[in-house]
Amino acid sequence: VKFSLQNGVCPESALFFATFALFKIFLQGDYSGGKYWSDVARKIIKSHPKKNKVSELRTEVLLHVSIDIYFMPPRDISSILMNCYHDAMKIGQVDSALISLFLAWRFRLLGGHNLSMILQFFKDRGKLTANHSKFITTFVILDAMLLKELTGQSIDCFSVFGDSLCNGVESSHDERWLHNLYIYKMLTAYWRGDYMAAEEHFRAASTHPMAKMPQLLLIYHTFFGGLIALQLYRKVGGNDDQRLKRGRQTMEKFEKWAQNSLAVFENKWLLLKAEYCASVGEHENTQLLYKASIKSAQDHGNIHELALAFELLGNYYCYHGHDVDSNECFRKACVYYKQWGATAIAEKLMRKHGLRMEPEAFSELRLGKSKNPRQ
Image (cartoon, helix red, strand yellow):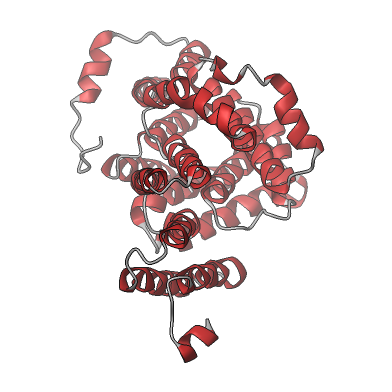
């Protein structure tokens, strides 16, 4: 970076400015600095249009998946990554194209995109990815594992490789894949309601060398890790209140991240704060915070986290004996889980609380107004 500033920049310089932006966040926690240098990298690209398209694509993807995640909703980034996929295909960079395609759909999966559409993508394009790159396929299989847990539908387009593919990567000790594996095991365990197993996988991911590398999975690893800690604290307690401490630290981290983007972090921060207040007995604030998280998720079109917030508010009401309010929250959670496409989660919630959903409930909630067109 210093050499470029002293002697002039070239198209290839953008990649190193982008890497410097990544390190500003990764090593120093300097988000404004990371944003500043990422903007410099983008200005370099614009000042040298189409001089080195391969380097430009790599720089753009790096910025989207490591810097923009703190400032833009995942669904918006996924659309940009799809453009990177098409641009890479036009210049014959098939490997780069498939990586962009895989990342675009992972961002949609974790960012609350409709799961039915994602299922259809896997069925249509899964074999194409599997036939071209076994390594990329190992990461896509993790997405398929989470998708199956949420929807209850399996994807057979990867069956040609069987378990041997993932076992082979695991035995090779590929650090990126193992870190992804721990986080996806945490997520699937959480959605199954097995919080002890989820906490175990959270710890495995937390001690991994890539644990602090800026990426979308870091955000969800941190978010669900905080929820797991606070829910286990209320259910089984923890030695020296370590779970409560971890929950508070997570809440504070998301408060800091929310300063970068309310659309990405506000509803998560408010939900963690509600769970923390419920854990320490600050009941005068708890309901207000749950409802504020619900409103924020609704305003920003985060339907997956809207459903989750209704479920956790229902749990809070249920714990305090407010059965009518809790059942109403659980019904709304089921509706939004189904609209997201997480039918397996909705059906499990209905069975757990003995709920019956009338068709009118779905149409009534669909007509709810929101500031965000996605809703």
